[in-house]
Length: 354
Image 1: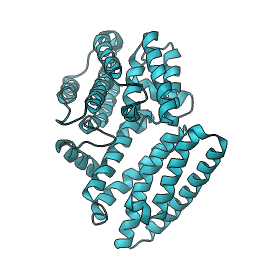
Image 2: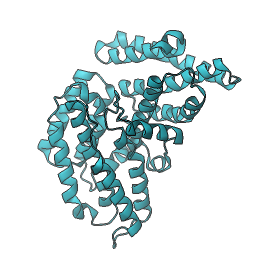
Image 3: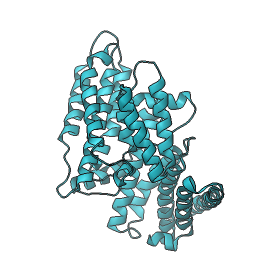
Image 4: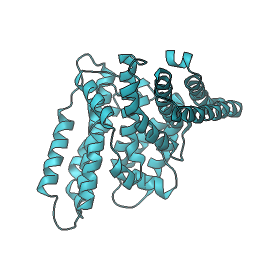
């Protein structure tokens, strides 16, 4: 990356990220080295933040701003690789959400179109998939920055295929809308009646948007299957909103939830565990896994995550397995994607699902 070659902060963060990833399997000595790189990177980041606060907004100031924006995104990835359980990734995302719109407006001369597109993809991917780990009140307040959302919408309409979002960027942009829909339902929740006409219209629109998604022409087979897996996971995210909205919702909507979960499981089995596509499938695997009730299916998900953890050496994968295990062992009603946040709060940890 050209920016890393000319920027000490970004270079150190990439070294820290690489060291953290290696330390997952390389033992104590590598973990010490990784922590040293990580601590140094945080120190450089704090110095850069201080420099930015006194910058006068000239060309050097814009370059510094760009390095800060990119650094927050690298930190998010590093936390996921570490398997952070303290929610540091959510802190980094909050900073990235503040910096990114300014970067998109001001650092235009320092950023190529390809790099600009990647920054947008990286942020939208990480931000939307992290909402599920937030506390309910934070979920309801979360919004993608307008500039990032508009740019991501442009990319999705252009047929953009990325390293993280594949061909399903359009689906990720629907996640905040589903979260807001759920908040609306919970605010008007009652035990006797169904959802309002306005809420049903919103549901129908969201369902239509999810079902109308199709992969771009030229997408690889793995990308198409991965996109379809995300599609089923989003349907589950949406349908479980309805199941939670009334007293008998679990029974009323059990059929469509089971069907979407079964379809998701079937699609997952079309991809070999531990392969390249799995690096971007933690979120849908967790969502689908939260909705299955048969032990044989839970064992399939469990085994897949074990293979993924061994093959990919990402610490967050083991954390995802832990939170699903806690959910599966609970005997409460309402085991669904929305319960993942509750499980994390009850056990005092936060898992990144990106």
